[in-house]
Length: 319
Image (cartoon, rainbow, N blue to C red):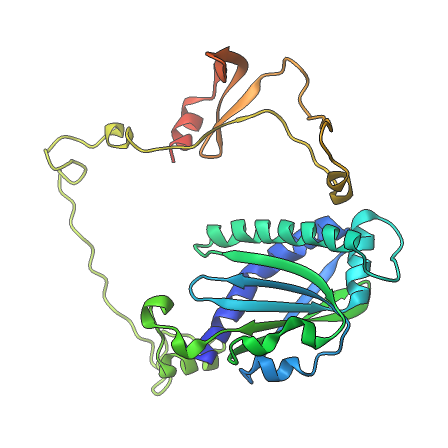
């Protein structure tokens, strides 16, 4: 894995994740943010980390897909205090306490959860392990000397209400030890340079002659048996009958603020949006299939279907 290829992955990931991050932050902190990214080309995060000015709020975690990286985010303490104050709708405190760390940790997990969903929909993955949030007064407390010397540095510029803050993101990875199997389809140095220098060029236009590359398209032929199975019989829904689908019964919804969730304890009661006696929704693969009522079958909860969705909706649920 070359450092330039890591930076390409970072650029691609940011372009996919940016809108999701801003949307979740807007919901959590009730502010409108803008977010920009710049990547350092030094490839030496340990060296650049020495320039950090402390104290800082530090978020630290590992990712293991497709290769192991140790991530360290550093946030100015005034930004962290403002984020917590916006989240709980109060005035910003002067110092960060355990209450701030607990609340911001919940917010980070919320952002990560939504980001994981977004990346999964795009065919990617976000595998985060050992998330730690702490207030660090000195650089020595982080013990970065034991981490790999290679990686990248990303600077995020966060703007809200006309005020700008910088969040630094250090990625420590032993890139030379990453095998081709870990990387997947490895890009050559020539291919990487071409991607970095492309800047919106049209791949169908020859850069030397200016001619457009056009190829003839050959379509397959269709015959009267094209829709039949191997036994010559028409394909039908029978071929799908052994496919597993996720069935979920929805009891109700409730939207809560982070500060309300933090107040929950043993014995707390959460009021849902459904009234007693209302039919429950039954979903298959995220699509509503039916409505029903709760029953008890051999000491287990069940649902008696009282109304089915239309035929077209039920067919969509199979997908």
